[in-house]
Length: 299
Image (cartoon, rainbow, N blue to C red):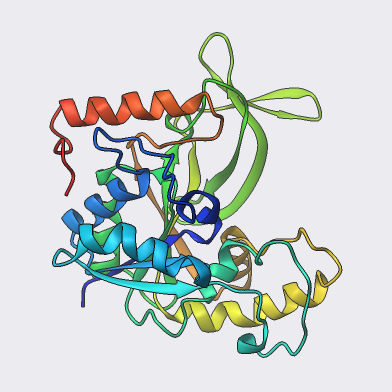
């Protein structure tokens, strides 16, 4: 059974919900998400599952079905505010859903094979998809998951500080913890630091960081549901609280229920953190087209 690529796209309503499609980065207006799908198909993924808000189903289908028909199976998963499917008999008013781990949990009735999860608006590079496909086909188990570890210096913006989940890794290559560093940046001499309480702390340039690229089996759904119930109970009155995937990782490692292999990649990650990043992303994709990594017309 081929693995599935699950794309976290419920937060993309403002871009994909309008017909402006303002975020074209490729030579024919291709979005970043399309390069991830192209790489996933090439790496042997059998299905693309988009996690979206239900009201944007028609927009997504109009964009992706003509491009992907006959190339890969597609599926659409809805992330909503309804807590009843998770056994929580409450209505909690919120401006946005409950975060990335809640989005993954929303896939529990539709994903039945090993899968990986990525952000919709990040570029990850083919090397990462190839390595994740290998892991999902050969190594994954119900107590053995994974995360792609990007070198921190291959993930930074030239236009400001970024937050990064820094992976602590043991001698077997498994994650011990993820530490959120809120202000990570290049110094003038090109070294990488993070700021804590106004003090610059050094980070080795090859330190592995999480860019939200995770590998699982469907066993993760059963492991996650009780954690989500506890999270909702603890955060009923906090409308901004979000249930993130690293929280799952942390809990499952601490409780000994699962390990997470950190799969290193030297691929360059890029995304649009600041508006000034957009031309850089366009230039990066243009260079990848020129050097033959991608065809000029993706589909």
